[in-house]
Length: 197
Image 1 (tube, rainbow, N blue to C red):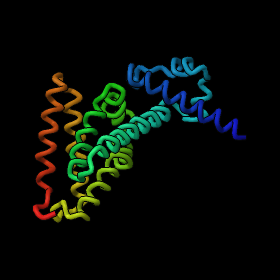
Image 2 (cartoon, rainbow, N blue to C red):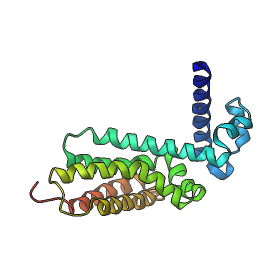
Image 3 (cartoon, rainbow, N blue to C red):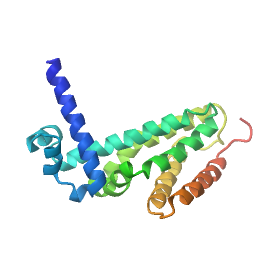
Image 4 (cartoon, rainbow, N blue to C red):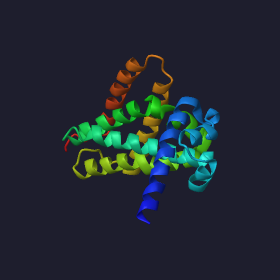
């Protein structure tokens, strides 16, 4: 029983890894399910059994990309012991990670188009927005924020980050755009800072 479960988990992991490479390189429309299963040395039946179809496989790949970005944000933010720096570093890390090649097409281009806006948004809330909200709650409890709604602030910052990430993704001068983004994020967040923490 344990062996079967371990084999199943390995099959799923392998399919996700290979599919992520194909979706990144070719995009959802041009990634062939036949090529993915051939490289994984599996059958189409394995995909249908575990993911129902190509779209189901893409959704799992999208979720894994989102989780990887969220983990990266947490990792970067934890490098500072200052909650304000953690917020700024985390916001900048989100933009930088989301525009990397292995994430950009899946999260920003194909994600909304393939999954639809509502699904894309709910997955964003489950990962990035949840972490952002938790950080803002800690900051509010410690008196670092002006008395504003945490829910409203979370949605505002998240929306701004998603939009600036799209701008970065399409900007040919990526390093300059990222520096400009960091400056703008810092100024935006500063507006919420309490003068008496």
